[in-house]
Image 1 (spheres, rainbow, N blue to C red):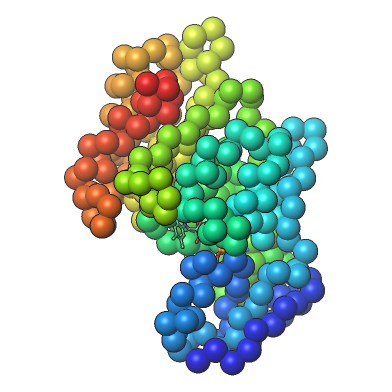
Image 2: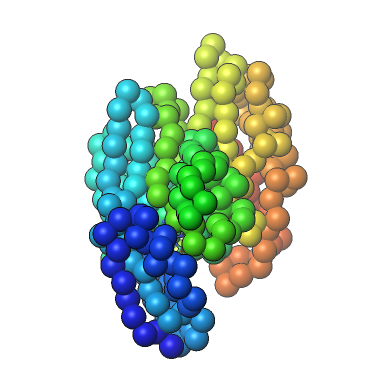
Amino acid sequence: MLQSVVLPNSVPEAIAALSAPGSALLAGGTVLMPRVNAGDDAITTLVSLKRAGLTGVRVSAGSVEIGTATTLAELAEADALAFLRPALDAIASPTIRNMATVGGNLFAKQPYGDLGACLIALDAQVTIKGAGGTRTQPVAQVVAAPLAAGEIATAITFSLPATDGFRFAKAGRKALNAAAIVTVAAIVEVPGGTVGKIRIGLGGVAPHAVRAVSVERALIGRPFDAEHVRNAAAEALKDIDPFDDAYASAWYRARVTPVHIRRALLGA
Ligand SMILES: Cc1cc2nc3c(=O)[nH]c(=O)nc-3n(C[C@H](O)[C@H](O)[C@H](O)COP(=O)(O)OP(=O)(O)OC[C@H]3O[C@@H](n4cnc5c(N)ncnc54)[C@H](O)[C@@H]3O)c2cc1C
């Protein structure tokens, strides 16, 4: 049963507080608090990130650093990140986005993972701090395996994409609070009509957000036209591990993933 909530004033203090048995890291609480309220006996102390100094978006010379305790609503207000607004607007509802944090989104289990898909496409890196020091890991690895006990993700960094280089599409059942059937985020650069650079992140089609490496391989160096994109999108079946849930069957997810990759890349 929950016995205390601590509010450390720094990351080292938060790491120290997490070493106590039964402690859990609290960010916006949109995933964790329902567990606590349901009487999760494993959690006796909540270590809140509220005062640990992990909020804010900093942009300098084309590089972006986001504090992990930044809420999704705050992220949507960053002018330099306007390209992410369609993705952020598709997450949950304004009420949830006012509380939910960027870091929490990475560690919320599927069927969520819209921001994870975007950050995989952006080749974002996560700074992780713990008692053993600081390390950096790509988002694709962070969402695939839990952090070690007592570790905290503190920042996310990536380079701004080229203007109009970011693409996004999400298929869900309704406008608000609709977990993804499939989410597609991509960075694509097409100098002279040929695909020069491409990175694709997918959400909703595996136990965590994944990179669509097979689609990328099939498109790189090829003409960026409907035929090549359609053929490459079909390769996504090698990258995904779809599941059944209340929103869609695994069969349906597999069927529509190539369609939404094509829509995200070509806009049609
Ligand atoms: C109704 C509803 C609809 C939603 N719809 C969508 C959707 O459409 N798309 C989508 O992508 N997401 C969706 N979500 C997920 C939502 O984005 C997450 O709930 C939210 O981002 C989690 O953030 P939080 O700050 O509330 O995390 P918390 O609930 O505070 O924490 C969640 C987990 O992450 C861990 N954690 C948090 N921050 C860190 C950190 N910095 N380092 C290490 N571990 C950390 C916590 O310890 C905990 O285990 C939805 C959620 C709800 C409740």
